[in-house]
Image (cartoon, rainbow, N blue to C red; front, side, top):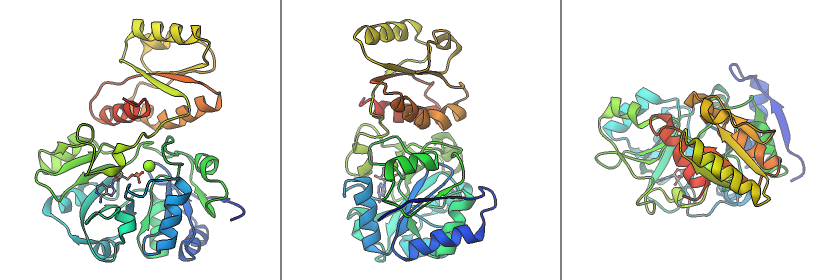
Length: 336
Ligand code: AMP
Ligand code: MG
């Protein structure tokens, strides 16, 4: 493939003629980068196996890491899901369209390639008007993993998609930076109690308000259930080092030690206590509001990479609500 076109599109009210160009690419078996409220996705026709194969190839994604199918309505949902358990219905009604992915029994229409051979399929109805318009114009469900090279921080702007996948996708729809900045929360509703397989933009607390107690299966037994959570992920080129929230001494000691060893050190902090230590361009102070911190995290990791940081020291966040998701990403970016 030759060129990758970046097409600007209105985030709230997407222009039909722009959406139609992207839908035509999907119909031809091509790949489209598209915005969602979580991160940018890499779209391909879920029923076209060559297209699905190219998604794995261009991302360098291991074949045993299944893809999420993105739908815009119940007809497409019924095509891929065999049975929607009651708690799945309740969650769908409460949070779709939105940053929630449900794992349910699949139909025979869904290929083993998409599900990595599992008898379940992961489905999401994204909340971004551009994503919904694209799926509607295309007509069928689309697979939509994050549009980055496997293992890298997820893309939160069209430029990030271009940086990772230039020449590999035909069109990138550019609707500006994504608002959540973290991936969707993946919940398996085939079990009782339902199980969170990956923390994401929707918090455990909000899920439990709707269906009662759920379990989390993202850290300890990270093997069979959500294959994707096994891999190193979300990582910039630099080595990520995590220090505790407001640990001024720990942070200052680590910063000094790393600088003395001659490394280019980037920093990401958010508490006023650590912000006082600010030095230079590779020291980023993010707002301590967890929503805004999350929105900027992947982007800032990429920016520090661009400054050739060899080490990035990140101040942790309190582990509740969205903070639990942020800490999950940071731990995995730092390899535990
Ligand atoms: P990504 O597309 O990169 O956002 O990752 C998709 C996530 O959903 C990975 O963590 C996958 O392991 C998980 N996933 C997708 N399909 C299934 C499934 N059928 N069962 C369990 N987890 C799944
Ligand atoms: Mg991903």
